Length: 139
Image 1 (tube, one colour):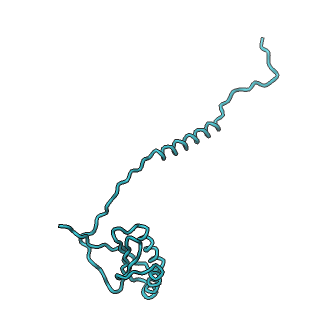
Image 2: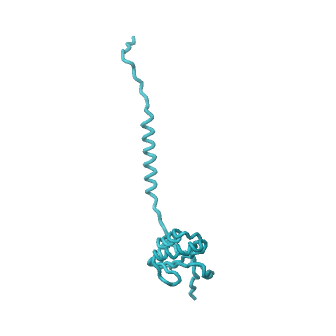
Image 3: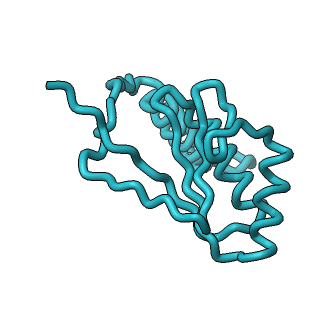
């Protein structure tokens, strides 16, 4: 004989929402751990120099030289950044299409070259290029 309980019988169920939360947590954890496990190794690279470069010096252009200390030179004369900006702004107002060539010494930092490039762009000059010098060959 079966005796029935007045309380309804509860059936066991598997809750899937907490399982999904746990799976997303594990996925994110494994992704973060795998990103930190990468060991980036770099090599010091010496970029090649031009061997057939020709000087394109023209009177209607400006050649800026950046030395290893971040100082700028225009046609062999040292010039401060505010004075350089005024010079470039004046030349851009007279002729907005004149070219400016930026060259750097071998020891010049990348940050100083980009700073000079940004200064030239803020002056309103559109034709900007980096110039290269002929590499000195040793025989």
